[in-house]
Length: 429
Image (cartoon, rainbow, N blue to C red; front, side):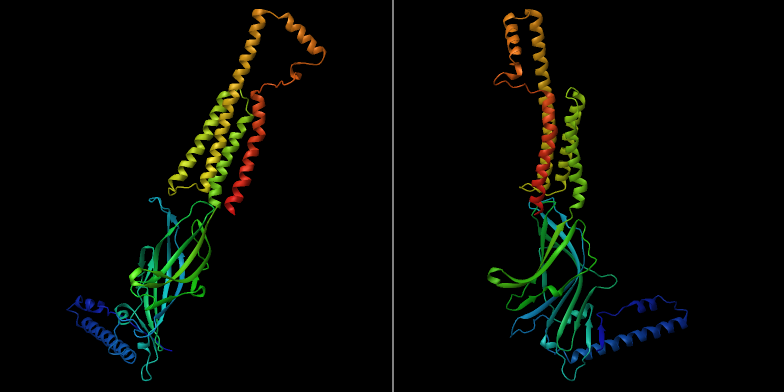
C-alpha cells in the first residue's frame, strides 16, 4: 500500500535565493529561475495529487469541526502510548499539601473511525499522511490531561505531529510531547514509601454520549531502558472510567496509574548509617572514665548537635506535613539515644559528687569526734557473727557512677537493637 505525505506549506527559500542573486550573472539567474519553476511544478503536482486523493474521500460538505457519528453512537477513540522517558520525580516544598511533579516524554497516538472519510471504489486506496496546516482539514479529538501543570510539543527538527488517513476511514493522530503532571503524595513511610501517580486523559467538550476513550495494558508501552532518578517503576495499570461534571454530564476518561517505589540505598548511605554511627559513638562514652569530664561532655554535646543538624537538613528538603515520617521517627529516636547518653553522664557525675561528699563526711567525723565505743562494739559483734554492713536485712549498696556506666554499657545497645527490630519490619511491610 502506497503512502503519500501532504505537507502544509511550501518553502519560500528558492524565491529568497532568487531575489538575492547577482542580477549581472544571467546564467545564474536562469539556473535559479529553472530551479524555482521546478519547485513550483513539483509543489503544484503534489498538491494536485493530494487533492485527488482527498476528492474521493472527503465530501464537499465535510465539516472538520463536527465529530463523526453525530446521529449515531459515540466516537470511540482508542489510545496508544509509548513512554520514552520519565524525568526526575520531585517533591514540592512550597505547599502544606505534599505534591510531587513527574514529567513524561511520550508518543501519544489516537485512533478513531470516521465514516465520512471511507474511500469509495473510484478513489485512491493509498494511505495519506497530513502534516502542518493540512491536519486542520480533518476532525480530531479534543483530549486533554487532567492535573497537567506544564506541557510542550516537540518541533526539532520538524514538528513531531502527524495525522494519517487510511482507506477504511481509520484516522491516526500521532504526537510526541512532554507533559508534567501533579501527583498527591503520602509520606508516612518516607523514604520507604511507594507513590501512586495517575495520568488521566479525557475529552474537554464531548461527554460520554458523544465520545469515549479506551485504553488497555497492551496499548501502553514503556522503553525497556527507562531509568528514573531516586525511584523505581514498580508497575503500571490502565483503566477506563467516567467523571461527572454536573449539568454538562459524564465524561469518559482513560487512566494510567504508575506505582513508584523510592530507592532506599541512598538514604541508607547518607542518613541511616551516619546516624547509627553517631549513636555508637555516644555508646562509647560509657567506656570512658566518669571522672574524665571534658572528654565525656564534649562527646555527648557533639553527638547531640550532629543529629540535630542532620534532622534540620532533611526537613529543609521535604514538604511540611502534619504527621511524622519514617525518617523523622528514626532521627528522633537517634536524638533520644544520644541525649540519653548525655543525661547518663549527668547522673554519673552527680553520683561521683555524692560519693565524694559521703567519704568526706565520714572522714571528718572520725577526725573530729573520735570513734564511738558503742559503735565499735556493734561492729565487732557484727563481724564476729557474719552480719557485716552488706548483710544487714534490707540493706542496698549505694549506686555508684561505675555501676551506672556498667548498666548502660549493655542496656544502651540492647535498646537500640530492639528499636531496629521494631522499626524496619514495621515500615518495610
